[in-house]
Length: 550
Image 1 (spheres, helix red, strand yellow):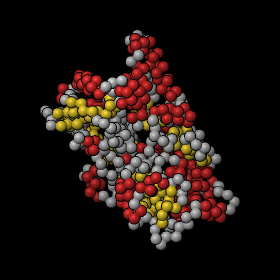
Image 2: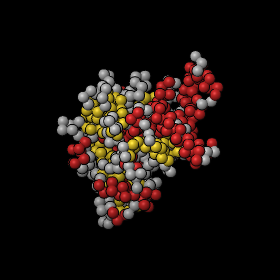
Image 3: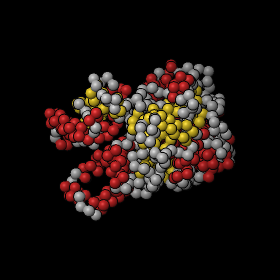
Image 4: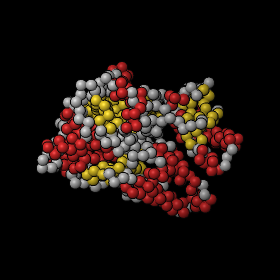
């Protein structure tokens, strides 16, 4: 069965079951209602003379409308070009044109920021809010009245839309189905050509370990325009017949906790930042209480305290999930160590957009602490090192999940593949005898120490971020010395009544504390306060290239 046909099967079999809902609203679609909306858009695509393989861009926040358009494009046999709504208007315009998109669906707010004269290849643009026509190219004759789609659907299916009417494209798995534009830490956005085969590799693996079924619940709160956000709690979940609730708002801890309580998801897909915030704001203050400190020094009593903390975390997240999957960026080592200590059911995976996205993962029962899981059966990994078990080298991969290449960018495609066909991830790491991957950092961020030592700034930042009044940090080299930019925790500072002068003293103490925790060649010479949060990718990795000249 091809990747696209998975959804024909799922929509037919789960016709009367809930599929997509917008959190906090009454808007919800069964699989049958979702398929009916998709059928309307297929009629629209036919009117616009859309051919199999044509590109259609999609940009807006996570909503059921976004999901309807995504599946309509996919199941028609066209190529989805999901664009992060956080991209600036110039980048969105560039992607629409570079991808050669013939249609655009976007939020009203995004359309208002775009220069309409810059889209020579675009036939039409539609509102993602209600599908009304924003724009049509001169010479096109598209009916601006969206109600005509209802009439045409009734005309096509006079006895009602039924499961047998769901019949989707048989586009081969080796063809591109999604064109994902990356938003990495290096500042260059490239179009990743993702095939049905790439996505099938991820779906097959997810099914082999999670076994989700009709009626299981998912809460989707990561950006769906990103490969990690969409793969498992959206594409896999819908192929399995789950009910997916789209959060549709910034996943602040308080918002998420309420949503977890309401939805009670069966699996939770997250980025590290969510759990790092919970650890820092909820757990560290608890561990600093005098009676808790005493209890944790007492045999047997410490186990009871850890069990209570684990149970509280589980309950905060709905209480019924199989496990939490954390990926997309490096996980703070102290936060991970604590979750291990209290036996919280989580594991860390590893992937990249170019692998749609998964490279390695293990269920929590098999997870090796501080690894990124075991290499998938459909993938191969090698470490470009003389001793891949002990000496970090670049992680290189090949297999079913690896992209075709970068769209209209042969130079970048050649650069990312080795001469013998392995994809260069740009990440540095080691591997053990059981094929568990251990990541040290990015090859482009590694700093060479004064005597040739390899310094991984992410490891230093992981320690610094857990010190008092540090919200986030960025370690870099200047004039052969390491400095740390720190964005302070302003809420905690205000609550504690700390003055700017006192804050400088505290940061100097933090520097001393940090330097006792790291190797001699990793010591920080200076901490500099930074006035704003660091700009990040959708995976919440800091865009380091923006701060090299600070």
